[in-house]
Length: 573
Image (cartoon, rainbow, N blue to C red):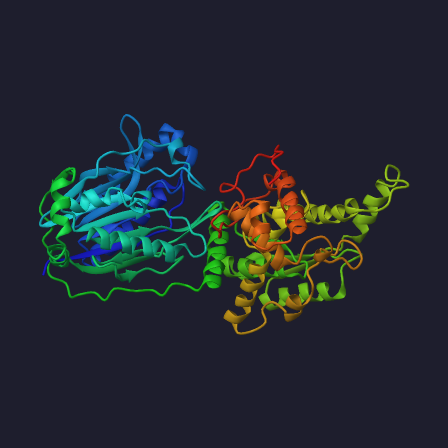
């Protein structure tokens, strides 16, 4: 049996940290070599971090990336390594280097450049043209990059028809809830259709609003998953693959004979013979169980928060604790991400704060074991009202006075941030951001919006998961039982202004994530007046969202890079 041991290094690079990324890659090569791997693969643009965006316009950045690849090449002795980097020819290319026993054997250029959703690769790269195959001893390997594998007409098919028995695809595939399952189905289809082993390596970690979930997989020529990495964890996924299984499967598939004759010939690069090594005992490949949806979202929030805080040089965060479900979940995520010693909770009661919310904020802080501060805003609020008494004379109190309270709280949190170097984590959810139920320069003030892409109904689900996971009421039960309220006026409830959250979230998902029109939603059974009111709120609050801090992306379409309607806009929806 012709056996090849493949390792997939799902690492967490940092954009621009070329030196640190290179160390991660070199360490991964050493680990793979120690395991007896014949081939090790690293994610898309592993050298530079992904996505490097406008750093690609800096010539010194490109040069440093090429110098780093030279260092990686020297380190990759005794095996074959596939490493993502930026190649510079007459233009820039998103590329995969194929390094064999310390020598650069060849380079593959990504052919399909995504330019939708969060992707903007046409801004930076030229598309590749050749679906190269590498003949390494008696093994034929095709290499491609991320988006290439998603197309049935992509380079995988000509590579397989040219003799590739293994396709290695290196990826920076951003997470959203449920994507890992969808992605694995696609990989299985591609492997079965082209009768190849398929090794899919994905990075992990957070980069601004994006989170990468790993879940690297090895799939056999029948589309069966034989190895799967964990989600949101750095690790080396290793499996032994039977190359003769490809030959046997192809001999039973008569369609391939005609396809091979008709196919355009992919170029083949012959590499020096495979490195001789002492036969190692077989490995038992890891097949990690996929996470349930709610836990998947929770882990994404943790990783996204941890990496945003750490990679931007912060150690500690501060959170305004209202005693409500949103701030409770954000605090729980922060403790998981950073440790309780690095989280401060601040309660800022106003004249309208209830005894219940004040008590719950205190109980939550004690349950999490975080530092707890109490900064009442009533004296400051009275000072504002006194200063504004003359211009506001004869006018009724309205949302203006409500927003003043939120802005006082934002100012206090930012003062703590300035004084102590803490990053402010905001606590608004996607439902609130969507309809503008938030205060600009108030509760929207901060450095990172942890649950910005989490609808209110999902906030409750994830918060319940926090308690279930801990086996205790980390978040007090009264927080779940109390009706949501901003507590900025007497007896205020969110539902005084908004539709019930289950109804609201269904409309928002349809309009924001699926781009359905008012007519479409009404035809599906939604109340016309409620839909029209909701759509109007979403549209007129785009200006607020443009000024919001970044936050973890967990849905297929998040505010920010994903959804970009014009602010000045008269389209009725």
